[in-house]
Length: 398
Image 1 (spheres, rainbow, N blue to C red):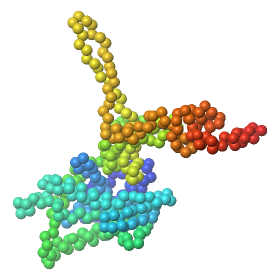
Image 2: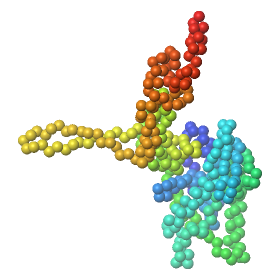
Image 3: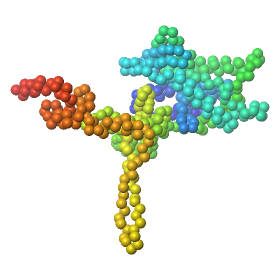
């Protein structure tokens, strides 16, 4: 029974679009297999806020005998898996002709299962009944099966001695595998020879778990979906839309992925030595999220000085002084890291990118015809082919 469908989001990011296509394909295959079954409750694109953190599940199946989590991954090229030991398994894939590392989707879905079990255990009294009318039932022994569904066009390359992880399947292979697992669980619970105590819940309890999770779904609030951005005319630039949308604070969760924090970062140095500041998601480190916006420091708020005039003396005009804004830990670390940017030696060589003094940069700028308006260090000035360029211009003029 389908209780929650996917919520597609329009995006121009090719990676996000590919991920949504993979989720769409996986949702279609799971719906076709389980949407008509009354004892299986199917949820797609579920995001739960648990404490100070949030976790997102691509696909979730809830049955009487346990829960199954499915993580969809878009992989249309070679995927290399190397296992070093029981706890370390490295994934690498091809992107635009080069190899790049990627987070392990198996560890990702296992962490989602852990958070989901903790969340349900916290609210077990609202969901499950009591065994023998005395003992509160819980989710400590509930099976949480985890699966990774990859694109059918993916090609796996396994290093010597590395088997394919048992949780990983092609998208078309996964629904039959989950169905066979459910049949096996049903046989275990109905077998008279099985004397072990197996965890289970009633159909009504399974449905209550599913409805409880749907009620606690918290969709990700994206900047482009805010009322301020939606009120802009279609011709307004994206920068203006981002400026009017409420920006997150440093240290808060990324408004796009909801998994990493946003921090203040400095952009590349310009010709004059200046650097632009950005609010960027920490997902830039592993390339899992590309969200960033320009950051402007808070405007200092004026503070009014209170004067107590003497009796009979007119009250003087109010005097204002600027109050420095509060500095967060992230801002302090960022400003310390790039403290050299505000020093006089904040220029760099256009050729070798080495830092150069201001007087060396001005020497090049005063000789625009020779250096083309760019600054070079003394070594690159000596190697600069200005004579050859001058002869070439002279030949063209002749």
